[in-house]
Amino acid sequence: MPMPADQRLALVTGANRGLGLAVARGLARQGAHVLLGCRSLARGHDAAARHAEAGWLQPVLLDVTDDWSIAALAALIGREYGRLDILVNNAGVQSERDPELTLRENFEESFGVNLLGVALVTEAMAPLLARSPAARVVNVSDRAASLVRRSTTASAGGAMYLASKAALNALTLSQAQALAPQGIKVTAVCPGPIATAANAWAAPRSAAQGAMVVLRHALLGPEDASGIFAGEEGLLPW
Image (tube, rainbow, N blue to C red; front, top):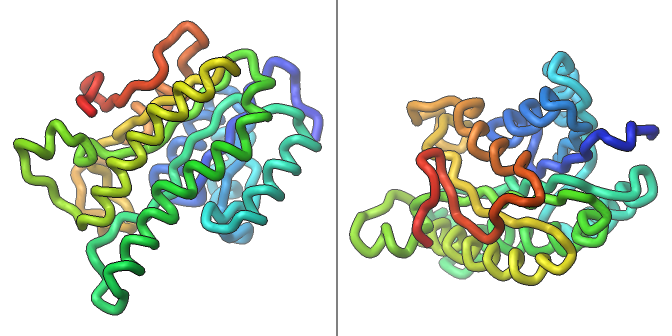
């Protein structure tokens, strides 16, 4: 699919609703061609149709827990576009312990999406990001994952979720260091408490409000910082 050489290409995972869709809409409004990574193409097409006024939103099939799905999307992007400028790793699970599952199964579910999914998608997209003049990876984290904060303040959320997001922060640092020679900047960002289907809309801020800090870091230039953890208020402690 033809795309202007100066138009940024972005991939947002978990993008058919909530924060992911809000981020995708924001990027499209900034002129980017946005790939909506969705496990269901039908839901992705529905989301793109409902928000067509935002700009170029293209649904693509992506299950971050499926190696074949990840590889197939990387191949498609390489074949159709040749590069990727922005990757927003938004797909995630946020849940208390499921009593129907064993402790191992609960941890495997959280880590499989929140950590391993991010690692695998980023690794698959890295060769495409390396072809961008200003590649940026944004990993959506949570301030509750800050070990400094948690040492003095109790945090809501299941142990498996909090542990997976703390591990995501560690992964972000490793990715920032490993991808720096290729000119790829990586940051972890906390959008703050936002109302989503996952929390039954029980938060004071909208997905669009939470998306602002993600967009800010997704659109930073090559001279801006990498390997940081940030929120709406600025830098957050690891």
